[in-house]
Image 1: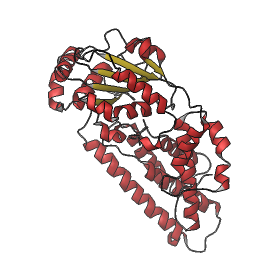
Image 2: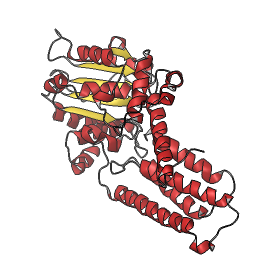
Image 3: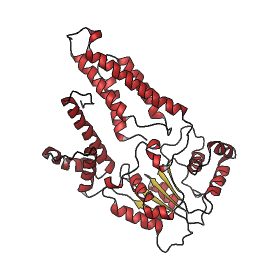
Length: 374
């Protein structure tokens, strides 16, 4: 899943390119659009953020649209500095995108990555910075109590689910728990696996999940391939051996309705007598209840404190360290509170867009090329 700002910028680029009359360099823009489509469809861990390229591409397209509106030029077309600069910029973007595409093609990693590289495998959510999380303090405490649960048998197995609508902070809450020192001290190994989206080429998505877990446990790709010939039973047996005798913590992030793990034997392959635990996040209450039981479900609701979403917005627009105390910014607070509707992701995306618009305006004042809003 991509970052919301990447989705926004790509859709903005497509709309501008295909709506209205064709601009100069249209074929080159269309070629870059195809490369972007290919990169965006990939789920390879080698894929990195293309946000910077999208910023620049939107800006260059706007430059072309501006030139198209001008009916005359003081210099011959071939010598126009603006067009020459546009051509060079497009060449640079093309080179950068092809390097990303080639690194994806040559990557041999087909399974999940360790948590410290989550941002490469899950574009929607970089590894959370606790200092920039607001409004989830009580939820973290409650989730930690459920996981560590004083008085429960240390060898008992448990599964917990965090459910809520998209953008409410389920992944963020799970990340905060995953990285708490108290949790690190209790569980080894800790494994984070993103289940969104499911591998497109997987005949059996449940097998794909088992392979991801094995890969995160350090099992070599060629060994997993040999085990795969024995089907799901062989993969689950190998997983059982890898976790046997260990107090593990597994986080399955974004379990979907279509994920075939929500049945009566969801935790086959996981040893049950050593204190292992599983935490899942899901948008489906039915799936979560089936997998972990109704008593082990945490319902995450939109934030009710208006200061929380405002703080998230402020963190984003001041992420370069520049504190903004302008009265015009303070006037945005009621609008940000209303439009975010208590969803942290909405507040963050609005902050990202505001930040980029501000940087674009500053760039215009200094004669730099930045994306502009139409």
